[in-house]
Length: 435
Image 1 (cartoon, rainbow, N blue to C red):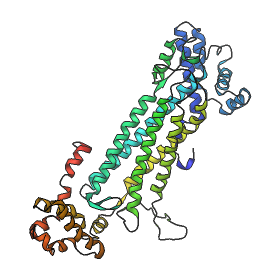
Image 2 (cartoon, one colour):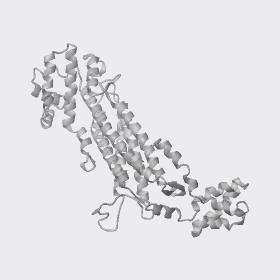
Image 3 (cartoon, rainbow, N blue to C red):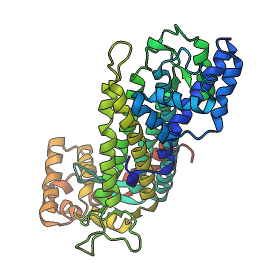
Image 4 (cartoon, helix red, strand yellow):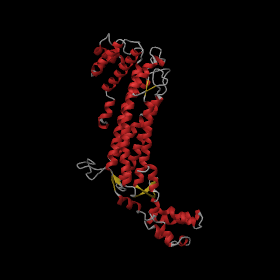
């Protein structure tokens, strides 16, 4: 994790102190369940909870691990230092390290998902607000980066809202799928621990018991989780790329907010660069880079190996912290995005009337001209506009082959911008419902 791209609440999910607190709760709840079953004395289970108010010493646990070369044993040794060796002798009864590690990891991922879901809800609110604000703000739509036909800025925001709303569903699904726990012992057979212990621990910690584990929770769950993060990151980049294009000097249809005292370049004082959305593009690449290792973790040897462990120690914190930061940053960009409607109109009219070519094409075919001839007539006049910047409508009106099929009023009617926005309300209703 890099502090520059981190927010405190998500970082806290992955702090060593948080991890050890979760480990303690898993072990303590397991002791309660075993006491209920009569496997261990009730007094011993109660004694473990004496450590509930303890702030575990991370440095001390690291010191023990330096000798034992085993992180869970190091923690259990430190726990016994607080509880007492005799009172703690039943801790971890019938369990294996992965019961603690995997259940904890899934709790951390679930908590991270909750934060990401809240981030997404904030972003959706910002996109919705801007969509309605610019519902009727005309801009040119582009395909292949080239002017196509008119759309509205509101539809652009609405499109991104719909995409992010799908991502919200993906995050909720990912959270549900990852919220499992396993306290099934070595190779997952429950040979030395009753399944009731797993059920109790999971119920106390807000998890669902894993239907069948080996010595680890199946990693297809984690692959799906990180894949969902990768899709969200790709959508972040999708929006960022659109804004970067709009902020180009020769386009300037929208721009990131530029605060007082902000500097765009160390050499050129006039610069106002899209640094936030460029940053988001890079962060999205980092999140996506963690998807493939998560998928490669699915194939483990037999009932367990630890080839996944080093991967997850990296991608768990890094992917969630980075995406959390990116979603918050994107929300800020959308909230403060400066939109230039006049520039949108000017850009659309750079080649006067040219974007209405399809309407004229269709009108000619409806008037009885073959599609091939209609295309030839329209393109012939359109190319003049490309080459000389003349007015497309004027060229059509002076073309005898066109006017032989269409009257002046029929040609002029084809240049009504309202034609292209007549279904905006319908699209908004599909995206936002009755809002």
